[in-house]
Image (cartoon, rainbow, N blue to C red; front, side, top):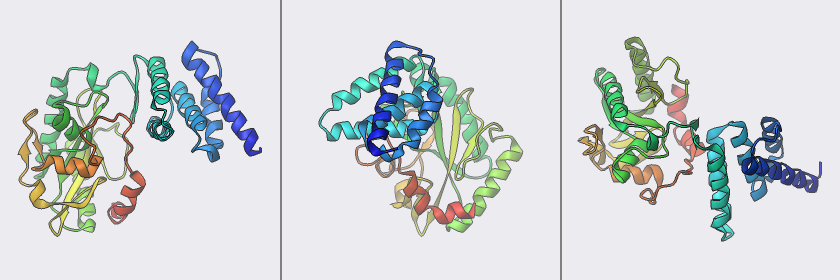
Length: 295
């Protein structure tokens, strides 16, 4: 297929997908069309390709994390072209089609935090934290959960899981990996792990509130510098983290200088909500390679 033919096909698929988004079911196999778009990935930097990739995936309810990433890239392209209103119109089309579901990194769901009671979520989170603390480790609010309570005073509306970090006693990557494996075994024995949680390198899935995932990430100090997989690799000192302080919203522990950690995790623009924030996972896997290889 020539490049011209490929682009013509991408335009056709994008048009079919937009038709479904705007007017309802067409009976087309969008899972198959989504795979066809991915086969034409040489056009990835092209706006029409990104729209086709996002629209077909949304209709097929497939690959949510990748689809969020493509949406972020699409927004960047429209902003570079000076036409952010085109992205806003496309985003509205996606949101209206999915309603009442919403697209998150974890799936297509109606259970984002803007539509549920937070009290039982925090209660379930407290139980998960207690289970880890019973092993003799400190636990703190991490990533999106920390961002929500610091920036918004609540869980982020478009989020749908709880993020925690556990401070290991290790002082090297190798020892951290060994301690992480041992902690996972202990938590499994006590029933604290979610038996249905996906096995993902570098994190553990804890039992949490009904319908809400609780992710536990490892943290440790190397020569007085904080390591938190996957977002902090020595940018913060131990004094910026310890002693942990109670979150005024939840009472759960958070880093002493939470704002500094959020700037490392999300960039200096962390105070501005961004439902399409794109974390640099390739960099994380690269800089944490010794730890990941050891676990």
